[in-house]
Amino acid sequence: MIKINLLPHEIVSKKKETDSKDILVVIGIGVILLAVGSFYGMRLLKVRKLTATKNKIQQELDNLQSTVTQVEALERQREVLNKKLGVITSLMKNRLVYPKFMESLSSKLPKNVWITNLATVSDTGSMTMNINGVSFTNFGIADAMDMFEKDERFSGHIGEISLGTIQSTKTEETKSFNFTLSGVYKY
Image (tube, rainbow, N blue to C red; front, top):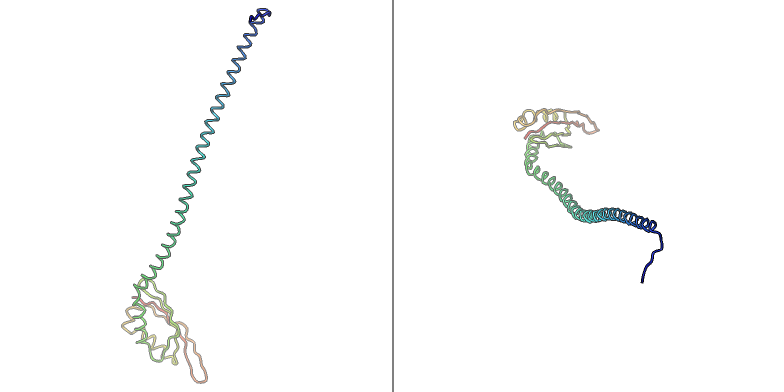
């Protein structure tokens, strides 16, 4: 088969130039598309890799969160046990203070005086006490104050014994005096 081109030579050479320009334009567009596609592909791979890393870290965080919850629960238990231990230690340390105090108080309390209420608050090395009592005579209150001031067991340990209010109550048969004493017992 033989090809015969009947077109003039100028048109044929012009067409060849146009074809080469078109080829260059298509190659340029292809290179640009290839560069954009490569950039997009690399970004997409990077996003997938970061997403996988994020998911892995999230799983580790969830695992560690359960561990943190357990540690916090153990810390709360430790605090509760430390408080209980502090109370037990305090009780063991001061277990003989109250019996000795009550023995001294009851042995030296005048016979005509009765304690109706005794409140104490312990601190380190001392105990604040508030005593409410009843006596049938005002001399009983004076004897109680005298006992606190003169008894050698209390005189060296209790400072600032103060007498509060005295209320007199009279019934048909008896007359009674309600009084309040307060002070600090040092042990």
